[in-house]
Length: 216
Image 1 (cartoon, rainbow, N blue to C red):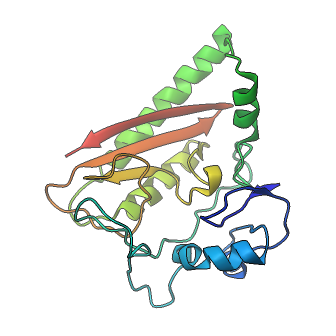
Image 2: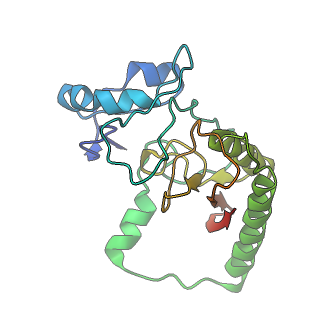
């Protein structure tokens, strides 16, 4: 079962209907039916790589609160090698273990061994965050920072947790200026004076480590 990719839906679906353009780019974007596919097409197509690579704002009618605008098209989904252990949502976007845990409402008490693993994962995620942050400079795009993050995760045999979490298209979140959180890395070019938050989460040894820092 997967999550419908229509922005107006987002329900669980066992449909075999998938976006043909996404399939060509190695992405599985499921839609409940033709109604969801047609109704969500105007927004969904914004994630497709443009042949001429011309930048555009996929949300022209959105009431932005500042000068920042989305800068699409997004780059293709970055691949994760088979040998890297993946969370349960890596394929279909549905975090089943999280959904189950929320329903049970139980808090897991970790063993000493598990706590040691968590600390190790936390240290590695901090190292990855610092590595990405060292590349922050005017002229670089948030998507290029995402590519650096993705490469660093693979170097440590870690899965970038945001990738495909409820169909999130990128490997980390980059929130620029007036964006509060969970910004999608795109073709936006950093400028001198920008305020940028990097939100890094990795999955390794069966644990997620989530941290962020703001740079200016």
